[in-house]
Length: 371
Image 1 (cartoon, rainbow, N blue to C red):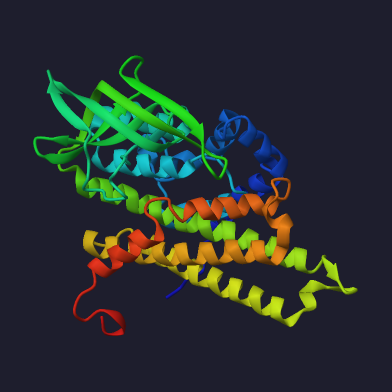
Image 2: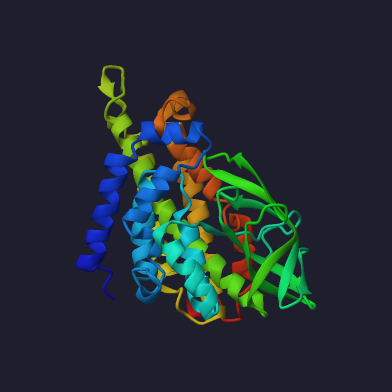
């Protein structure tokens, strides 16, 4: 199998990497974090690169690209621990392009592609514990449309969004809706998260909604799997930069008159970090390539990938802190922010224990090397 990237994919990687290096340095990121964790200016810059329309067909104003290009972009954004939730545009762009009617596509997809409007997935509820089939939010038929009532938690940049993709109970099963943010019927209370980004508690009170899929659970699973794949790719970028920072520190810090990078025990520890990074990278590729597989195969593959990424992110983050010593957890040092990002990402779209359970539940009698 050929894992080489095409020339266009490499150019895309280079363009995003240059933006991260020159326009989104650590000082700017810290400033955005202090201002609340979301910058409309940075979001506009990402949109001007065309990244918001990566998953959106050209006829709808996007670039008409796909999962591999999204993976390339997210790796580079991970290296800069970019706070703005570009992955949400990938999710909403894909869902709307595949499942929305012509009128909804025409109204929303060009605006998502241009960055004018941010549409985010609002699916988590208290007590659901990452289960997608547990949903208390209710949808009610209202004239020619629908209304939504319920509360969604940990919605990425939820107080900055123009609309939400919302699963809700409709006639005994989960349906998926597009809910525009409207004064009075949608209340979003924003707050900073552990990694410095922004999330919100969003309360819907008879909010007008547009039906995307009456059988919404398979579409929700598809959306979450795109989120898992982008999170895996972003995690690879974060770990890559974390390892580079750690190696640089070991080659600079001196003890007993020599750099501590010359100590054999520490070199072995770095080798273990590198091994975990490459395991994660291979599983990120696997996750991306399986996004087009049948639903059962895709779900199993994405659970496997997220489990390995969770193990790798925890190991790399904790090993980096151990090798740095006390400076590794100080707010002034860049490395601590990468550690916080890795710690939070392990729990995004299902934590490691959850996905271990998912992998186990999907194993057959011939599981393992004989499958």
